[in-house]
Image (cartoon, rainbow, N blue to C red; front, side):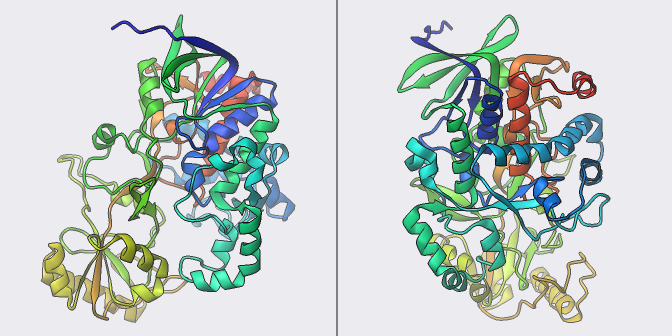
Length: 544
């Protein structure tokens, strides 16, 4: 099929596809090295999935922790990442883990030095605390609120959020906003009023605002509503991309290369079903995350890997941009709640940190899901304990939740064996009374603990596997360069964030191990694309 020639051309040094945390950090790093950078954003909004997030950031061996007197090191971080990794991953991911451990700290220092962002520690420790190299505190960070005016001409183009980002992540954590929204509002009322009037926002909005300000100060050019159509390849090298602007085809030539940071493929239904068969809920990311990077990179000759990995989260139904959408809320983490499979049996410790891995398990022989469809079973006290869940359930969940006066009636309503569900709840209630969950080892003490499910009406909520982002894509080396299926470098093409074959995958090592590594790989790609001279030993390792 013949292609119509582009009607115009634009030149730059580095073209970045996507304006989330990975793309903006990549652009910032490249521009700070003197590169002329264009950021092409598919939608009319800046920020991608990052803008919707709480912006918790996992960064090992960082300068904020060091200033607080917390000991950490790249070697300790690498030991933790290695210990947390799935079996067999070291064979391909070890060089990338080393890059993460070595460059995460410098990335954060660079970002703070080149943007108005200020990072602060949260009290959270590494969740896999029994593994070698784990830290009790120091690797989890959040950021202070920023005024949207810092986004300059794009202040009204910051991606709208699913709920207002008036609180910082740290504040929401400190007052347990999810369980006590009214108390939180009263405590922070003067501060919140000031933020409303001053246009200050926290969480993902602040992160995007700060990174964008840094990019603008470095001379980056941001093009909205400019989707990439295809990569331009000459003599085996990616030299730019064809983009569409207001219906017109334009070629952006990038002298040093193209960095793909355009998000996951969770809204590409065909590809998602291929790699994630079985029941699923609506994704919680923008609909623009439809696998553009994967399609273009594959067409240019890239190898795709880890396509069955994702940031899996439970969601409640909501609406976003006028369409049905998922909102990620960890509503199962209540003392009077359990998860059961289609047979009415518990199958996991509900407080398991990497629950997404459990939900994603399939029988290798049949391809059938081991645990899905699943349900959360609770009782009437859930509405008092979780007012945010109550709000979304009443507003969007009339066809979503089920209630019944007895467990047997509830089981019938959702298609589970009544006797099995009653026996499952009875065992859980006994474990709650004794303080020992001998089936799955759920902690009876602590911030969540266990409480009996005994007060009618009994409630069932479908517990769908849904995505904040997929985490598979073009395979890269430790310098962010995209590889071909034979392991050779595809010159001129780089990939970062959840668009890449993520070296951590579904198995997260901390609450912020999506955004933290996204920024890290954006930083690495930006430096590499702009000619950064990595140490000889690292370059040799990356080249294999």
